[in-house]
Image: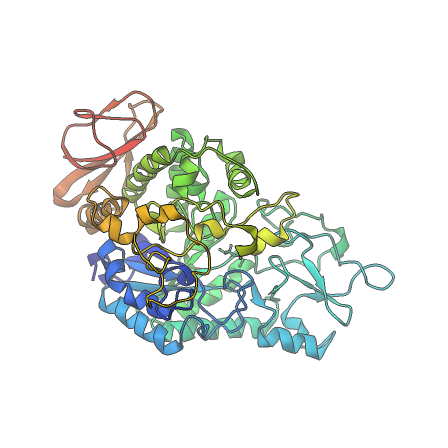
Length: 563
Ligand code: GLC
C-alpha cells in the first residue's frame, strides 16, 4: 500500500497510470490485450510506484472507437475476458496496494447497445427513441439532416435511419448520443456507477464529461451555426459545457458518497480553463483533467502559465489539479517535444497535421524529444495534485507514425473532414513491447508462443524500448520513472503539504518552484529551457533528468535539489 493510498482522499495527490487494455498485455494469444493481462503484469505496475490504474473501456463493444462505443456498460468484452477476470484483477490491484479507476462513457452508447436497437425497432415518437436524440430531417422528404452540425471525427453529426428520422452522434456514426433529459438515462448510469463501485472500482474517469447536457429546444435546430465550437462555452452553446451538465454530476456525487471511502471521478472536459474547476468541485466529480500541460509546446512561458492556471483552478474548485503529458488521444510527448516547437494556440492542430497526415515526412529529433520528456516528467512530478501517466510513456515510446492505412483502427482516420487524410490516434495505441527479442514477432505482447498478430503493427525500434531491455539498463526511461515516482512519494506526497512557491530570479527561460518536503526541508525543482546552463541552488541533488555540468543545470533538463 502506498502511504498515500491509506487516506480517503488518496486521489487528490495520486499517480494514476492509464492502461489501454487492448494494447497492454495479451494472455490468451488473440493479439488483443486482456484483463488477465493486467493481472499478469500487476508486479510490473506495482514496481512503477503508482497509486492507481485507470482502465480505458473494456466493456462489450463493436470497437468502432477503441471501446468508447459501449454496447453493455455492466459487462466485460468477451475478447478481453469476463466479469470474474475483472474481479480478480481488482483484487490483485488492491492486494498490491493500488486503486482501480474505470472509464464511464455517458455521452453516447454504441449503436449495438440494446437500447439503441430497441429505439430503432420502436419507431418515431416512442419512449425507446426518447433515450437518444432522434429528429425529423429537413427538406421536402426529410432527406436533409436537421442541421449542419459536424461530428468531432469529421462528417455530419446526424445519421438517417430506415424510417427517415435522424439521430445525433457527436462522434462516430456508431456512437449515438444519449438524451440526458430522459430519466431512464439517469437511472441507468447511477446503476452502472454502483455496479462497478460494488465490484471494487475506487473511482471513475468520465468520458466527454462536458457534452451530456444539450439544448435542442430553445431555437429551431436549423438555426444553430454548423460548428458550435467546443472551446466556446456557456448558455449559447447548444452542445458543449452547458450549465445544466453540472446537475448530473451533483446527482452522481450522491452515489459516490454512498461508499466508504467516497468514490471520486475525473472529468474529461475540454473546456476553457475558467470553467474547468466546476467539474472538479467536491459537490461534483472531484477532479478534472487539466490538458494545458499537454497542449503547451516546449516553452517556459507556456508551461509556467499552464501550471499557474492549473493551480488556480484547483484552488477555486476546492480540490486538487491534475497533470497530463500524454494519453490515448494525443501524439506521444517525446515525439511532440522532438518536433520543431510551435505555440500552443496552434500546437495541437499542427502537431496532429505533421504526424498524422498521410505521406508527410517530418523531422523528429528523438534524442531531443527524450531529453525533454525526462525534464518534463520531473517538473510535472514535483507539482502538487495528481499525475496521470499513459502506458508506454515510462518506456519513452514515440508515436508510431507509419501504420499502413489498411491496418488503422481509429475512426478519426476514416471520418476525417479535415480535408486531408488524417491517420488518427492509433500511433500511441500500439501494443506494448515487453521483450526485446521475441521470435514470435510481437515483442512479448502475447504470452502464448503461438498467437495471432498484435492488433496494430509494432515497429522494429520497439526493441530498444522493451521492458526487459529497459529493466537491464540503469539509465533507461523506465528506471528514471521508478526513481522519480519513489522520490515524489517519499519526499513530497508524504508531507500532505500542497503548497508551492515560485522561485523567481532565474529569468524567463527557467521554471523553478519550491515545495516543503520530508524532514522539514525544501525541495526546489528547476527546469532550464534556455541555451545557457543555470546555477542550481545549494543543497543535495536528489535527482536530475540529465547529467549536470558541475553544479550547473544544462539546457532541456530538470533537477530536484533539497536543502
Ligand atoms: C474521449 C475519448 C476518446 C473517444 C471520445 C469519444 O475523448 O478519450 O478516445 O474517442 O471520447 O468517446
